[in-house]
Image (cartoon, rainbow, N blue to C red):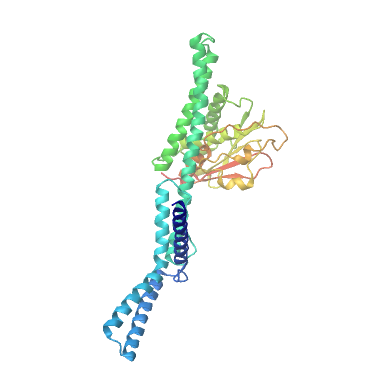
Length: 385
Protein backbone atom coordinates (compact mmCIF):
# COMPACT_ATOMS: atom_id res chain seq x y z
CA UNK A 1 0.00 0.00 0.00
CA UNK A 2 2.77 2.39 0.94
CA UNK A 3 4.75 1.43 -2.18
CA UNK A 4 1.84 2.30 -4.49
CA UNK A 5 1.26 5.57 -2.63
CA UNK A 6 4.89 6.58 -2.98
CA UNK A 7 4.81 5.66 -6.66
CA UNK A 8 1.72 7.80 -7.21
CA UNK A 9 3.27 10.79 -5.48
CA UNK A 10 6.40 10.36 -7.60
CA UNK A 11 4.32 10.39 -10.78
CA UNK A 12 2.51 13.52 -9.63
CA UNK A 13 5.84 15.23 -8.95
CA UNK A 14 7.07 14.30 -12.44
CA UNK A 15 3.85 15.59 -14.00
CA UNK A 16 4.20 18.88 -12.11
CA UNK A 17 7.78 19.23 -13.34
CA UNK A 18 6.70 18.64 -16.94
CA UNK A 19 3.82 21.06 -16.54
CA UNK A 20 6.13 23.72 -15.12
CA UNK A 21 8.70 23.17 -17.88
CA UNK A 22 6.02 23.38 -20.59
CA UNK A 23 4.63 26.57 -19.07
CA UNK A 24 8.08 28.17 -19.01
CA UNK A 25 8.70 27.11 -22.61
CA UNK A 26 5.32 28.50 -23.68
CA UNK A 27 5.95 31.79 -21.91
CA UNK A 28 9.41 32.08 -23.46
CA UNK A 29 7.99 31.76 -26.98
CA UNK A 30 7.24 35.41 -27.67
CA UNK A 31 7.82 35.92 -31.42
CA UNK A 32 6.32 39.43 -31.44
CA UNK A 33 8.85 40.90 -28.99
CA UNK A 34 11.13 42.34 -31.74
CA UNK A 35 8.33 44.58 -33.05
CA UNK A 36 8.52 48.21 -31.97
CA UNK A 37 4.76 48.78 -32.15
CA UNK A 38 1.72 46.85 -30.97
CA UNK A 39 -0.05 47.88 -34.19
CA UNK A 40 2.68 46.23 -36.25
CA UNK A 41 2.45 43.11 -34.09
CA UNK A 42 -1.31 42.89 -34.55
CA UNK A 43 -0.83 43.40 -38.27
CA UNK A 44 1.62 40.50 -38.30
CA UNK A 45 -0.94 38.27 -36.55
CA UNK A 46 -3.60 39.14 -39.15
CA UNK A 47 -1.21 38.57 -42.05
CA UNK A 48 -0.13 35.19 -40.69
CA UNK A 49 -3.75 34.10 -40.29
CA UNK A 50 -4.62 35.18 -43.85
CA UNK A 51 -1.56 33.44 -45.27
CA UNK A 52 -2.42 30.18 -43.50
CA UNK A 53 -6.00 30.27 -44.72
CA UNK A 54 -4.90 31.06 -48.29
CA UNK A 55 -2.37 28.22 -48.35
CA UNK A 56 -4.93 25.74 -47.09
CA UNK A 57 -7.47 26.86 -49.70
CA UNK A 58 -4.87 26.47 -52.48
CA UNK A 59 -4.00 23.04 -51.13
CA UNK A 60 -7.69 22.08 -51.22
CA UNK A 61 -8.02 23.22 -54.82
CA UNK A 62 -5.00 21.24 -56.01
CA UNK A 63 -5.76 18.11 -53.99
CA UNK A 64 -9.50 18.00 -54.68
CA UNK A 65 -10.22 17.95 -50.95
CA UNK A 66 -13.67 18.99 -49.85
CA UNK A 67 -13.84 22.69 -49.14
CA UNK A 68 -15.76 22.04 -45.92
CA UNK A 69 -12.91 19.97 -44.48
CA UNK A 70 -10.30 22.50 -45.52
CA UNK A 71 -12.33 25.32 -43.98
CA UNK A 72 -12.48 23.53 -40.63
CA UNK A 73 -8.76 22.75 -40.74
CA UNK A 74 -7.87 26.32 -41.70
CA UNK A 75 -9.96 27.79 -38.90
CA UNK A 76 -8.43 25.46 -36.30
CA UNK A 77 -4.90 26.07 -37.59
CA UNK A 78 -5.41 29.84 -37.63
CA UNK A 79 -6.75 29.81 -34.08
CA UNK A 80 -3.84 27.72 -32.80
CA UNK A 81 -1.21 29.82 -34.55
CA UNK A 82 -2.90 33.06 -33.50
CA UNK A 83 -2.97 31.87 -29.90
CA UNK A 84 0.71 30.98 -30.13
CA UNK A 85 1.69 34.31 -31.67
CA UNK A 86 -0.59 36.36 -29.42
CA UNK A 87 1.25 34.98 -26.38
CA UNK A 88 3.67 37.84 -26.90
CA UNK A 89 0.81 40.30 -26.40
CA UNK A 90 -0.92 38.68 -23.44
CA UNK A 91 2.16 37.60 -21.45
CA UNK A 92 3.22 41.11 -20.33
CA UNK A 93 -0.36 41.95 -19.34
CA UNK A 94 -0.60 38.76 -17.27
CA UNK A 95 2.74 39.60 -15.65
CA UNK A 96 1.60 43.13 -14.80
CA UNK A 97 -1.69 41.82 -13.41
CA UNK A 98 0.14 39.45 -11.08
CA UNK A 99 2.54 42.20 -10.00
CA UNK A 100 -0.33 44.64 -9.40
CA UNK A 101 -2.11 42.10 -7.22
CA UNK A 102 1.09 41.54 -5.25
CA UNK A 103 1.47 45.31 -4.78
CA UNK A 104 -2.15 45.53 -3.62
CA UNK A 105 -1.15 43.04 -0.94
CA UNK A 106 1.74 45.23 0.21
CA UNK A 107 4.62 43.70 -1.78
CA UNK A 108 6.19 46.71 -3.52
CA UNK A 109 9.33 44.83 -4.55
CA UNK A 110 7.68 43.15 -7.56
CA UNK A 111 8.88 44.23 -11.00
CA UNK A 112 7.96 43.22 -14.54
CA UNK A 113 10.11 42.56 -17.58
CA UNK A 114 10.90 45.76 -19.42
CA UNK A 115 12.99 44.44 -22.33
CA UNK A 116 10.37 44.97 -25.05
CA UNK A 117 10.72 47.82 -27.52
CA UNK A 118 7.04 48.53 -28.18
CA UNK A 119 4.26 50.21 -26.20
CA UNK A 120 4.20 47.30 -23.78
CA UNK A 121 7.87 47.95 -23.03
CA UNK A 122 7.08 51.60 -22.27
CA UNK A 123 4.17 50.49 -20.08
CA UNK A 124 6.45 48.06 -18.24
CA UNK A 125 9.01 50.81 -17.59
CA UNK A 126 6.29 53.13 -16.27
CA UNK A 127 4.91 50.30 -14.12
CA UNK A 128 8.33 49.57 -12.64
CA UNK A 129 8.90 53.26 -11.96
CA UNK A 130 5.53 53.45 -10.22
CA UNK A 131 6.41 50.38 -8.14
CA UNK A 132 9.76 51.92 -7.18
CA UNK A 133 8.08 55.18 -6.17
CA UNK A 134 5.49 53.32 -4.09
CA UNK A 135 8.23 51.28 -2.45
CA UNK A 136 10.17 54.44 -1.63
CA UNK A 137 7.05 56.16 -0.27
CA UNK A 138 6.26 53.12 1.86
CA UNK A 139 9.82 53.10 3.21
CA UNK A 140 9.61 56.84 3.90
CA UNK A 141 6.33 56.33 5.73
CA UNK A 142 7.90 53.68 7.93
CA UNK A 143 10.91 55.90 8.58
CA UNK A 144 8.64 58.83 9.42
CA UNK A 145 6.69 56.73 11.93
CA UNK A 146 9.94 55.52 13.51
CA UNK A 147 11.51 58.99 13.56
CA UNK A 148 8.40 60.72 14.90
CA UNK A 149 8.00 58.04 17.55
CA UNK A 150 11.59 58.59 18.63
CA UNK A 151 11.27 62.37 18.57
CA UNK A 152 8.04 62.25 20.58
CA UNK A 153 9.40 59.79 23.10
CA UNK A 154 12.34 61.97 24.18
CA UNK A 155 10.51 65.22 25.11
CA UNK A 156 7.54 63.33 26.56
CA UNK A 157 9.86 61.28 28.77
CA UNK A 158 11.72 64.43 29.85
CA UNK A 159 8.52 66.32 30.56
CA UNK A 160 7.11 63.39 32.50
CA UNK A 161 10.26 63.10 34.60
CA UNK A 162 10.22 66.81 35.46
CA UNK A 163 6.55 66.77 36.43
CA UNK A 164 6.91 63.56 38.44
CA UNK A 165 9.80 65.08 40.39
CA UNK A 166 7.72 68.16 41.16
CA UNK A 167 4.69 66.10 42.20
CA UNK A 168 6.78 63.74 44.36
CA UNK A 169 8.57 66.65 46.02
CA UNK A 170 11.98 65.62 44.69
CA UNK A 171 12.42 69.04 43.06
CA UNK A 172 10.73 72.39 43.49
CA UNK A 173 8.69 74.15 40.82
CA UNK A 174 11.39 76.79 40.46
CA UNK A 175 12.07 78.76 37.25
CA UNK A 176 14.84 76.40 36.13
CA UNK A 177 12.59 73.35 36.43
CA UNK A 178 9.79 75.11 34.61
CA UNK A 179 12.19 76.19 31.85
CA UNK A 180 13.17 72.55 31.36
CA UNK A 181 9.51 71.57 31.10
CA UNK A 182 8.90 74.47 28.72
CA UNK A 183 11.75 73.33 26.51
CA UNK A 184 10.25 69.86 26.19
CA UNK A 185 6.87 71.28 25.20
CA UNK A 186 8.61 73.54 22.67
CA UNK A 187 10.26 70.48 21.13
CA UNK A 188 6.86 68.85 20.83
CA UNK A 189 5.48 72.01 19.26
CA UNK A 190 8.29 72.13 16.69
CA UNK A 191 7.66 68.52 15.73
CA UNK A 192 3.92 69.13 15.30
CA UNK A 193 4.70 72.25 13.24
CA UNK A 194 6.96 70.22 10.95
CA UNK A 195 4.24 67.64 10.43
CA UNK A 196 1.69 70.36 9.66
CA UNK A 197 4.10 71.96 7.19
CA UNK A 198 4.55 68.57 5.54
CA UNK A 199 0.78 68.24 5.16
CA UNK A 200 0.55 71.73 3.65
CA UNK A 201 3.41 70.88 1.31
CA UNK A 202 1.58 67.78 0.05
CA UNK A 203 -1.67 69.64 -0.56
CA UNK A 204 -0.15 72.89 -1.87
CA UNK A 205 -2.50 75.05 0.20
CA UNK A 206 0.00 77.60 1.53
CA UNK A 207 -0.29 81.06 -0.06
CA UNK A 208 2.65 83.45 -0.23
CA UNK A 209 2.27 86.82 1.53
CA UNK A 210 5.34 88.72 0.38
CA UNK A 211 6.19 92.23 1.52
CA UNK A 212 9.25 94.44 1.86
CA UNK A 213 11.11 94.49 5.19
CA UNK A 214 14.52 95.35 6.65
CA UNK A 215 16.79 92.32 6.77
CA UNK A 216 18.97 93.17 9.80
CA UNK A 217 16.25 93.48 12.46
CA UNK A 218 14.35 90.59 10.91
CA UNK A 219 17.28 88.14 11.02
CA UNK A 220 18.30 89.45 14.44
CA UNK A 221 14.86 88.41 15.68
CA UNK A 222 15.26 84.93 14.16
CA UNK A 223 18.65 84.54 15.86
CA UNK A 224 17.23 85.80 19.14
CA UNK A 225 14.56 83.10 19.04
CA UNK A 226 17.20 80.50 18.18
CA UNK A 227 19.34 81.60 21.14
CA UNK A 228 16.32 81.47 23.44
CA UNK A 229 15.62 77.95 22.24
CA UNK A 230 19.21 76.96 22.96
CA UNK A 231 19.10 78.60 26.34
CA UNK A 232 16.00 76.72 27.48
CA UNK A 233 17.69 73.34 27.48
CA UNK A 234 18.69 72.78 23.85
CA UNK A 235 21.22 69.98 23.38
CA UNK A 236 23.82 72.40 21.95
CA UNK A 237 24.13 75.46 24.19
CA UNK A 238 27.85 75.80 23.37
CA UNK A 239 27.39 76.87 19.73
CA UNK A 240 27.69 80.61 19.01
CA UNK A 241 25.47 82.33 16.43
CA UNK A 242 26.83 85.27 14.43
CA UNK A 243 24.89 87.60 12.10
CA UNK A 244 26.52 89.37 9.15
CA UNK A 245 24.32 91.68 7.03
CA UNK A 246 25.79 94.01 4.42
CA UNK A 247 24.85 96.69 3.82
CA UNK A 248 23.18 97.19 7.22
CA UNK A 249 20.19 98.93 5.60
CA UNK A 250 19.55 95.96 3.28
CA UNK A 251 15.88 95.31 2.50
CA UNK A 252 14.19 92.26 0.97
CA UNK A 253 10.85 91.41 -0.62
CA UNK A 254 9.65 88.03 0.65
CA UNK A 255 7.14 86.27 2.89
CA UNK A 256 8.55 86.82 6.42
CA UNK A 257 6.84 83.74 7.86
CA UNK A 258 8.12 81.39 5.15
CA UNK A 259 11.61 82.92 5.23
CA UNK A 260 11.59 82.40 9.00
CA UNK A 261 10.99 78.68 8.35
CA UNK A 262 13.95 78.58 5.98
CA UNK A 263 16.44 80.37 8.24
CA UNK A 264 15.28 78.67 11.45
CA UNK A 265 15.57 75.19 9.91
CA UNK A 266 19.00 75.97 8.46
CA UNK A 267 20.22 77.32 11.81
CA UNK A 268 18.85 74.30 13.66
CA UNK A 269 20.56 71.94 11.20
CA UNK A 270 23.86 73.86 11.43
CA UNK A 271 23.79 73.87 15.25
CA UNK A 272 23.16 70.12 15.37
CA UNK A 273 26.20 69.40 13.19
CA UNK A 274 28.58 71.97 14.70
CA UNK A 275 31.63 70.99 16.74
CA UNK A 276 31.85 71.84 20.43
CA UNK A 277 32.08 75.60 20.93
CA UNK A 278 31.61 76.02 17.19
CA UNK A 279 30.29 79.03 15.36
CA UNK A 280 27.33 79.34 12.99
CA UNK A 281 27.29 82.40 10.72
CA UNK A 282 24.17 83.77 9.05
CA UNK A 283 25.20 86.02 6.19
CA UNK A 284 22.85 88.21 4.11
CA UNK A 285 23.71 90.08 0.92
CA UNK A 286 21.74 91.70 -1.91
CA UNK A 287 20.73 89.30 -4.66
CA UNK A 288 21.71 89.56 -8.30
CA UNK A 289 18.69 91.72 -9.13
CA UNK A 290 18.35 95.45 -8.64
CA UNK A 291 18.03 97.04 -5.21
CA UNK A 292 14.41 97.96 -5.95
CA UNK A 293 13.14 94.40 -6.46
CA UNK A 294 14.26 93.26 -2.99
CA UNK A 295 16.23 90.21 -4.11
CA UNK A 296 18.16 88.53 -1.30
CA UNK A 297 20.94 86.01 -0.82
CA UNK A 298 21.25 84.30 2.57
CA UNK A 299 24.00 81.89 3.59
CA UNK A 300 24.24 79.74 6.70
CA UNK A 301 27.75 78.50 7.44
CA UNK A 302 28.88 76.08 10.14
CA UNK A 303 32.17 74.46 11.16
CA UNK A 304 30.95 70.87 11.22
CA UNK A 305 32.05 67.91 9.10
CA UNK A 306 30.21 69.20 6.04
CA UNK A 307 28.12 67.26 3.53
CA UNK A 308 29.85 64.75 1.22
CA UNK A 309 29.66 65.54 -2.48
CA UNK A 310 27.68 62.36 -3.16
CA UNK A 311 24.99 63.38 -0.65
CA UNK A 312 24.47 66.96 -1.80
CA UNK A 313 21.97 66.21 -4.56
CA UNK A 314 19.51 64.66 -2.08
CA UNK A 315 20.18 66.54 1.14
CA UNK A 316 16.95 68.52 0.66
CA UNK A 317 14.85 65.40 0.05
CA UNK A 318 12.28 64.40 2.63
CA UNK A 319 13.41 62.09 5.41
CA UNK A 320 17.06 62.45 4.41
CA UNK A 321 19.07 62.71 7.61
CA UNK A 322 22.56 63.51 6.27
CA UNK A 323 24.06 60.12 7.11
CA UNK A 324 27.34 61.08 5.54
CA UNK A 325 27.78 64.10 7.78
CA UNK A 326 26.65 62.28 10.86
CA UNK A 327 29.09 59.54 10.20
CA UNK A 328 32.05 61.88 10.46
CA UNK A 329 33.66 62.09 13.78
CA UNK A 330 36.01 64.98 13.08
CA UNK A 331 35.47 68.46 11.82
CA UNK A 332 37.56 70.06 9.17
CA UNK A 333 39.45 72.04 11.68
CA UNK A 334 40.29 69.06 13.85
CA UNK A 335 37.77 69.94 16.52
CA UNK A 336 35.72 67.01 17.83
CA UNK A 337 32.12 67.08 16.73
CA UNK A 338 29.00 66.17 18.57
CA UNK A 339 26.85 63.60 16.76
CA UNK A 340 23.69 65.17 15.48
CA UNK A 341 20.43 64.16 17.05
CA UNK A 342 18.12 62.06 14.93
CA UNK A 343 15.48 64.50 13.75
CA UNK A 344 12.69 63.69 11.35
CA UNK A 345 14.60 64.55 8.19
CA UNK A 346 11.98 67.17 7.29
CA UNK A 347 13.68 70.47 8.16
CA UNK A 348 15.70 70.95 4.97
CA UNK A 349 12.86 69.62 2.81
CA UNK A 350 10.54 72.24 4.31
CA UNK A 351 13.21 74.90 3.73
CA UNK A 352 13.43 73.97 0.05
CA UNK A 353 9.64 74.02 -0.25
CA UNK A 354 9.47 77.54 1.24
CA UNK A 355 12.23 78.74 -1.10
CA UNK A 356 10.44 77.21 -4.10
CA UNK A 357 7.31 79.16 -3.15
CA UNK A 358 9.33 82.35 -3.68
CA UNK A 359 10.61 81.17 -7.05
CA UNK A 360 14.14 81.00 -5.62
CA UNK A 361 16.62 78.20 -5.15
CA UNK A 362 18.61 76.60 -2.35
CA UNK A 363 21.84 74.64 -2.66
CA UNK A 364 24.90 73.37 -0.85
CA UNK A 365 27.74 75.67 -1.90
CA UNK A 366 31.46 74.96 -1.81
CA UNK A 367 33.16 75.82 1.46
CA UNK A 368 36.74 75.29 2.69
CA UNK A 369 35.38 74.25 6.07
CA UNK A 370 32.09 72.85 7.30
CA UNK A 371 28.82 73.26 5.43
CA UNK A 372 27.64 76.32 3.52
CA UNK A 373 24.00 76.42 2.43
CA UNK A 374 23.04 79.24 0.10
CA UNK A 375 19.51 80.57 -0.40
CA UNK A 376 18.65 82.98 -3.22
CA UNK A 377 15.29 84.77 -3.39
CA UNK A 378 14.44 86.71 -6.58
CA UNK A 379 12.45 89.46 -4.88
CA UNK A 380 9.30 91.14 -6.16
CA UNK A 381 10.04 90.47 -9.83
CA UNK A 382 9.58 86.67 -9.72
CA UNK A 383 8.08 85.77 -6.35
CA UNK A 384 4.89 83.74 -6.56
CA UNK A 385 1.61 84.66 -4.91
